[in-house]
Picture (tube, rainbow, N blue to C red):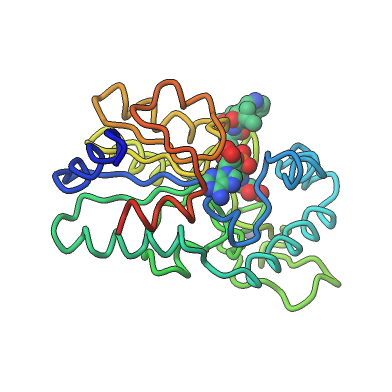
Length: 244
Ligand code: BV8
Ligand code: ZN
């Protein structure tokens, strides 16, 4: 067994403060397009400024709604893959012996919850929930059709309850995620290009505080040369073996 892997297995056994931090790559094997993979990336076909920003929504709310409706259909049709399932089983097992494991996700697809992970910290929100673009009130469930764009009781347009570019992350969730990272002895960064801030700073913060940082990604990222161990593979292949 690779020296790094046997050392990691020991750390997994001994560690009582652990963070699993995930990005779109964890959902790739469920058939959900990632953001930046050239051939499948969402941003390859659409511009994030146009579709995932308040300006884009102000300019053309219908296009933004239809893009999220398309993404939501893909999420609902998708099933959690072995990466989501391995994470959920691992956390359930670990929480029996120590409560110190935290799942932090940048994903908005809800697949961690469908795999059984109860309360991931959703840094960028969740596209299955809605909120009011004007007053921020909870927007309830998705409408049956988009013939008329749904509105809040205040008259404002509803929107998916996700964090757009140029918008702040939910303060409480980000604070909890930061705190978990700063306490972590072991920090896994899984399936993320490590490009989107402030989320991408979490593994760097943890590293500065002495965490052992493991990156799981088929490709190198800006985090790779700072990580203590890089496992170059698909999350759906690596995690079931690693976390079993
Ligand atoms: C903020 C929700 C403060 C919506 C997302 C100009 C103006 C304003 C801000 C900025 C600016 N310039 C820069 C910024 C900051 C900006 C930013 O970081 N931009 C980047 C692009 C440079 N950040 C923000 O705007 C954030 N807010 O800064 O607020 C502020 C406030 C007011 C005014 C100014 C500033 C908000 C960021 C959140 C944006 N919302 N999503 C939606 O989903 O529609 S971001 C989006 O990217 C997703 O959440 C996604 O999760 C996230 C990160 O992407 P990844 O998850 O990493 O996915 P990606 O495709 O990139 O990578 C996939 C990886 O998986 C790849 O590495 C691939 O190799 C790997 N992979 C593939 N297959 C597998 C795999 N790995 C494992 N297994 C596999 N099988
Ligand atoms: Zn409102």
